[in-house]
Image (cartoon, rainbow, N blue to C red; front, top):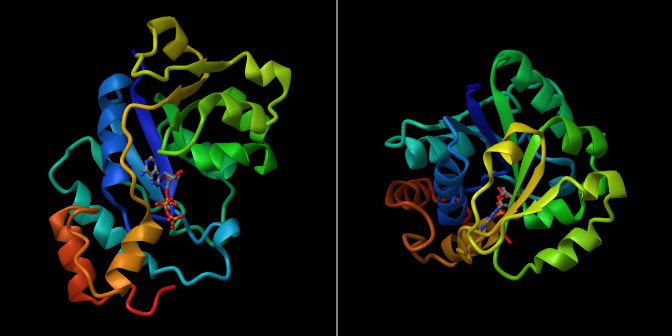
Length: 222
Ligand code: ATP
């Protein structure tokens, strides 16, 4: 069987318990061999905001994933000379892991805007895609709001309610909607809490919380 490789893109400023719980649930439910966190080189929709330096975002991901062999970090976007589109990153990763089946993971908030993404039709039809719920999003409304072409809508598989994908569904590039975990935390919450001088130990793994305090990250944020 082909290796199954999850690809979880994001800013990860910082990585937090929401990301990590999603990653753990996807490793289990999709029987992924590995999941790569792919920190972004400041994605277009976040330009203009203050984003921590790549080395801080990488360091926090490294601390958060040190003890889970299946969770890895890819610097493919951080090293890119220009800001790559997701479809380009996936192409590069597919070339690098040529035998693997890639599962691109995105949050429901990102999915809502997916039709504005570069080559979204190709992205959603060439790669397996996993949409991970975060609290406050209604799946049915979200799929409607995404305004996918009918051809793409037929590939959407609703696994909400903790359902597991079937072998034949996994074999093809489908769009899986999942709600395995509901951790109501965002990186914005973490930055605001740290910025107010409070501990973020409830929101991120202890080494990440310690790193944020040690380097006084987010003191001036928002
Ligand atoms: P910010 O608050 O800065 O927007 P974020 O918490 O959404 O950050 P990102 O690095 O932008 O973090 O997230 C990467 C991906 O993880 C996004 O697709 C996002 O939807 C998803 N994600 C973030 N937090 C959660 C959560 N609590 N549960 C599920 N998915 C999440």
